[in-house]
Image (cartoon, rainbow, N blue to C red; front, side, top):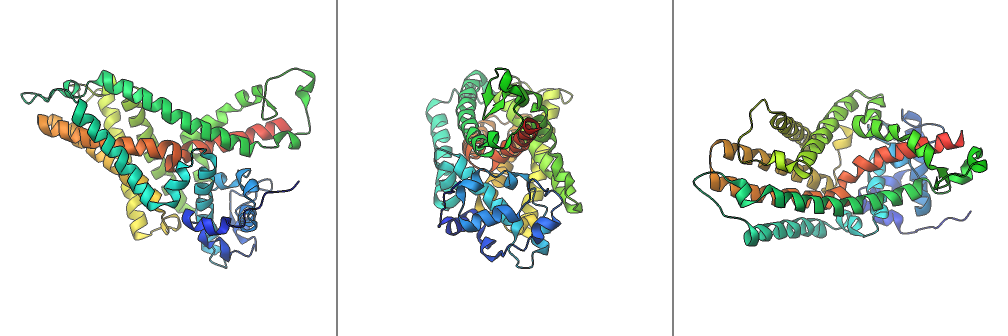
Length: 384
């Protein structure tokens, strides 16, 4: 079967942070030292070779970039200093841009001007929205739900959730098309041919249902992080879990539970909602601070090189969380005007982060990685 060749792909990869791939001469050392590489999914060597040959069609069908958790062993031992771990990271950015049918991911990853302007434009729109449409600013007491009624914010949250979910899931579908592409060509035992079945990419829907636990497992535990035979990786795994659980907790409370989370009365310190808010604040601030200081000091291999979009995600997430806890302190100190102004600033940071990061940038890997592991399990069961 012929493959489409993109002769310019290596030139593009510099913008995605994978410019060192040109130094690789395919000795296979990286694959040999990788504790996650298997006979069926050997990496990084195979996909780096696809990259060098310009086989973009092969790359979009390859699950391997998402199976890498960047422990850095391959980069530490590469005789050519090709930094295969960082190449895999760059490939994940490149693939994210290919899955995105809107082209926004590509612009975000390849243009710093677009990256900054996109954040500023969305922030400005949020600020203008509050400037023209906010409610009365009572100063004799804090009345946040008069200034910005939680029922209105809830409707806007649900609209935003629906739009972002559409973009994210449609991009995830394109990922699945690539990874499952030609799946039926590799599945020899068609037990279901005698029985009518609903097929998705040539595989019965019942298999997807039976293996769905694999997606849940990897989404919530990210346990393959801890499968790397590397002590520093356990620290990165815990830090990653803190950021993920903190982010997910606050996302659910703000988007789906805003009526209970945004209240004018101060909740008891023993209230579960307040406790979850404190946990999410600690988890995100600690996790993002650890990741940013690690990148500044270049303490471990995965932090040696950082793409601008990585900084954007970490900084926006840190500022969103910090401004959120400032709202809480302003309320505790009974400072009405400070509460309202910080609330607007908080949303001017949080909304751009959600609008850009969730469907188009760094956040996507939280869905894409467990999805690929799940699809690999589906293919394996279908072929059994």
